[in-house]
Image (cartoon, rainbow, N blue to C red; front, top):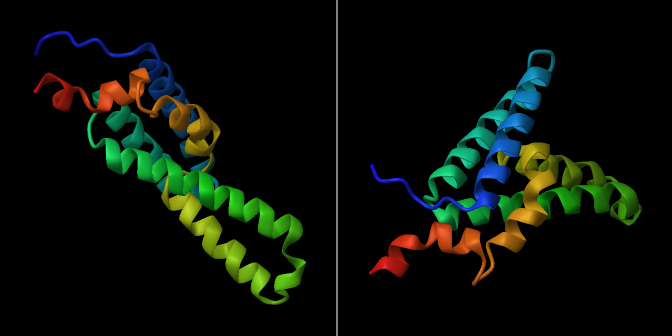
Length: 132
């Protein structure tokens, strides 16, 4: 396999995501609920490293960011929801954890900015389309 021009942002973000996933996995030794987000963060890091499945990667990062934002907003300002506040925040937490949890959430803004058209990460995920 020839050496590819992997952008520095892909290398850095994938490395940081693996480190954060390992930290989540360590927490998962005590609280099993963190094992799934750790595994998903590792899968997303591999996709980022390889530059594959760009749409799935971007969707997972976007879902993670939106569900985390919703979770924080509902917990802070959701008193008007009454008894539904805990239901909404619980579903939002589950969605966030199933899309990589805090490991992905910490890197989501940088990743989404890098996935814009004309940026190195966008070109990294779409290099096959550019070569054709």
